[in-house]
Length: 303
Image (cartoon, rainbow, N blue to C red; front, side):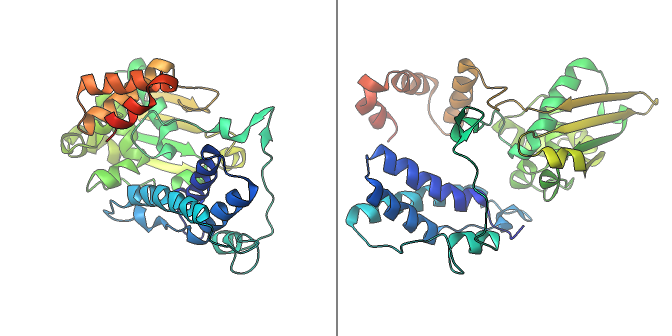
């Protein structure tokens, strides 16, 4: 609500804590790393507006400054006793108050971090419930974009703001649009990086369907978020027929996880997109699956 990008702010804290653990920091060093990350945390949601391509910048900056915070702790820099409370603290700056209720470390018998999802698709996570429904409807009905009068998507309120646009000028905008991602998944069955190439973004049929999609907030779904990230879709055909779909746990949630092979497929697709050969990706996968014996080789391959 205040316009901060959680990936850039909270993400930095997570990186500092995880790195401190990996480096076997004691409590004092970990506190220094976390405090340094807290006073460095930044990143606003302006990265989502217009044709901005800066969302990944906030992600990368969180990683960079999180590691820098760890290095500052290693160097012995002193920090404030409490970087989170008070007027100038992290909580008040990001949330507007330092009077907050913290989530328990354990949730239903498992650590909170085990509730983290893995994104199967290359778009914003808020679009994924609708993408799953689009893939299901694609297999169940046989309607072209011209056969569809309208598509109504209902979901939780946080997913609607800045994600309901149908004017798609480029890849950055496409990745944040629920209407576009529904359309490209339904029409072209594309959900990876290929869904954001010009031949999809400016495809006539995909554009036609995108314009027919409306997204609205549903109070009941909003009340259940974040325990459930629900979306429903209702397609109205020109001949009056209606087709519906509902998704409460999109692919990649702990309750609906990616399989081992699906994780490897995702990595392979991204690695090849980033310039690695198929053989190189296979070698990296093999090294990751045998980290205890092949860590030096893995580090060399990632250079």
